[in-house]
Image 1 (tube, rainbow, N blue to C red):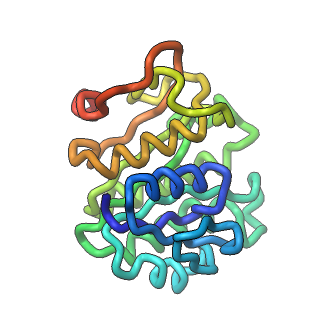
Image 2 (image 1 turned 90 degrees about the vertical axis):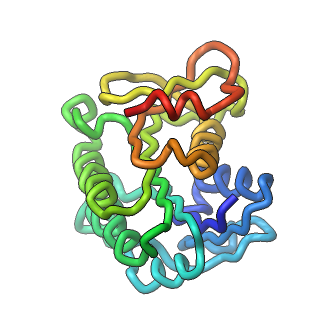
Length: 215
């Protein structure tokens, strides 16, 4: 696995991503406002995605970046508001990245249809701008759009990868972590944006064909 910094790696989903990377033997750093919550064996860097200097410091020397951050709910007056976190923060990542840095961004469904969830319209719009900044950057990227997140154990259901942002459903945070790590490991995941849903069935045994099927 590539050496990786997880921006937001002390959060509810980020912790699963860090733990999954560690199981694969990756060298992991975490950029977080709560560095005391970072697991042992991980280099913790105090800061957050809204600070260009801390993003640049955290990304120094890594091969890959995972962005898994949350913002204040529809409150752009907050320093942790949607624009600062998802839009401007994504641009901080892009500006700090070396040309071959693989960036995996955890976003959400509804990006193309914010009217389906008006309570989070500002967050959805800011995430969409952040996604586009990453696509326009020329960096190798993968954008994972999870459906509604649950705390159910991962690895116990089938996972459906879709494009077009028309679906709805749920997926466990642990399964999102698995998708992120698999995207880092599979070159065919690069340049792809997809939605992720859980459904009844067996978990994927081979992610390569799932990524190959995406546009």
